[in-house]
Length: 402
Image 1 (tube, one colour):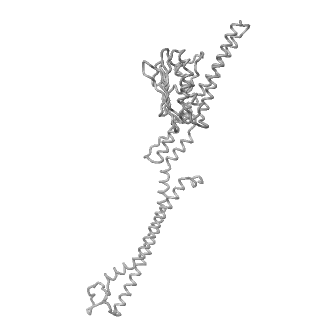
Image 2 (cartoon, rainbow, N blue to C red):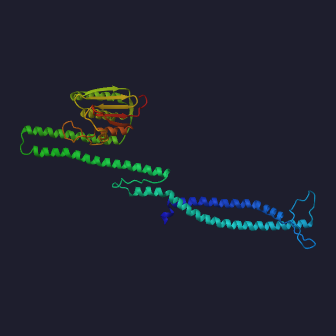
Image 3 (cartoon, rainbow, N blue to C red):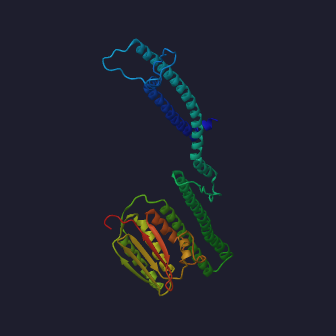
């Protein structure tokens, strides 16, 4: 009972009921005030008009009624006329008092009934208005990690509460996507980190069992070092991904065009060894951000473009004054439906083989995370055949002077 009395519905009922009661009471008071001012005169005029002084003729009959009329100026009324006026006034005052008393009694009874009806209507209206809030509250209370798929789906006319419910549903969509992504990330990270550990254990237990030859020990050593390097690279990538997800601690102007040119120069040798022609077209582009993270963004894009290219292919990187960094490469044909998945952690188009130079599947997800940290939009598109490959555009918010 106390919870009901302290609920928003009870407060709204009290507010609406009080307002309606005040409006009704004010209307009754106004009617009574207006009637008190003019009722006596109107009743007196009506009585005087329809019932002048009654006189009997000599034969005992009542003469025809004559309407009351004003006396000429300067005329003194006769005693009979004064008596007639006094009788009319007494009658009109009695009628006015009786009318006002009856009107006051009826008004008070009507006001009491109106108060009860107002309270009921206010309670009903408050419940109807707050019903969507109750639905939202119950849904939020019921949700957990196992039923994030549920939605409010409020069926109501457009309004503030409808927009609130739709906004809550949109928030649930984002939460479900986030929780799903975190679960996949945790499962994939565990798998990716467990595999190299299993390889190292197998190499140590099987390859170094007994008294192996020095050549075999050297091969096992190289294998263990390669797996350790791969694991170290993966851990560094995971740490970088975590750092980029936290956002920027500080920002300063960064010349992305100069940064992209330096990263392209660093990757030219690797691209040439893979038979890839790397070219650049650098227009002025300065953004506000973290230079180290932006360097990783460009570096990952270029490394991905070289790694997933083909002999005789090309790699093109460009910056434009509009705030756009573009990296395009040829390579195996990619279905447009596959592109969004490539931006998620540990997503590859082929199974991992744990060979030298193989990535951890975090490159593009790190790029997407760094772009989000800088408030930039990232768009990846599959290039049409026969070129294949990807074109990735990162649209920054240019800083002053870019």
